[in-house]
Image (tube, rainbow, N blue to C red):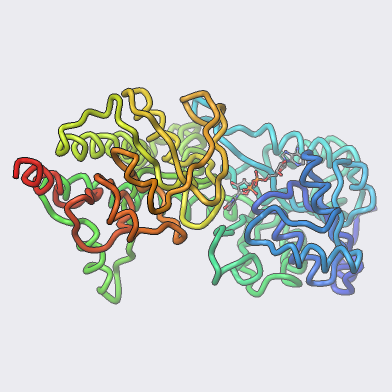
Length: 454
Ligand SMILES: NC(=O)c1ccc[n+]([C@@H]2O[C@H](COP(=O)([O-])OP(=O)(O)OC[C@H]3O[C@@H](n4cnc5c(N)ncnc54)[C@H](O)[C@@H]3O)[C@@H](O)[C@H]2O)c1
């Protein structure tokens, strides 16, 4: 007999539904907390025993999630974590929040989704709601997840409910967090959509239903491709400005005063993070399968991937004004996280810049209050480096400082006072200073050279 959506709806409304979250990372843990705060019992399933232990000890490891929130839910017995998928037997809903990286060939790596769905399928039971949240190509829910779950003999939309809902979390954003970012939801059937909307509606302020899982999957890829393409455009503009001796930062600041029809994007040392450098390739991979050539994505990818090389060129120009080569120079990278005030360095352009400088003979070190160590496996150098302090007194030991991440905690005044050469890829230092060489801005090199000659 088909499962009734009313039974699960009632359980959700009465908060008796037992919710599960597979993957307790940057996306899954905040969601588990919101579900717990909404009054559900939330069980996190993660293969990483360290994370599971920390949650069960009442501790957070995600900067946006206060430990007090984990403790509060633990004390009300509303939150627990396990590595064992057998718990799925007792759950009514599951949100899948596992990684979706790229293979070296830039093809989607579906292995985490496949392994999570395998774990769920073993214990799938009638009446459950399964929602995929991992960012992925349009068609994944219907073409990968559904057949694996239906291999159990249960049918999607009849015996269990299936939906896709993209995650839009912006780590480090104090204004927009899981509970107040509108949630797009697309179900396999209208009943699937409506149940997923019911669940999220209990914890998240605004729900945006769409007609299918494919539309919901495509929404996320549009959002992230939009960012990748616009960042590519402004990065190209920065390269042009460099040649034309125009300050790209001043251009963007003035352009953004237009109250309509313009949205500011900023240039930088290259894309970073789990989303923007990766997600557009999920879309282009799928588009190519249909014989479509996704030109914007490829072009933006090309420009953005070239930015670390441009940064190294800028370092070379800057050191040149001091009659120094990169080879043998001591270069301090300020910030290795992929963006300001967070600890995440996945796909960070800092890793590329460090590798390129090392390959040219530089002695590379880094400072980052959020990242104590860069492991050998994370960059082409292949050896572990620990963070150094970038405080007054030790800045001048380096021939150049390269600002890759504009953490608020850095003492920029000390940098200006003490560094011989600063390459600023984020416009972290305002105004013009003879020792500051900005990405996409008039060449300080000319001034610097004059200073040396004088
Ligand atoms: N981090 C972001 O800002 C962000 C924003 C929007 C969307 N997303 C998307 O959300 C998804 C998750 O990203 P994240 O940043 O939370 O990743 P993450 O690496 O922080 O967390 C993923 C977690 O899943 C666990 N895991 C991996 N395989 C598993 C399995 N088979 N079973 C159980 N647990 C497993 C890992 O141990 C890890 O704790 C990705 O698809 C990502 O693209 C991320």
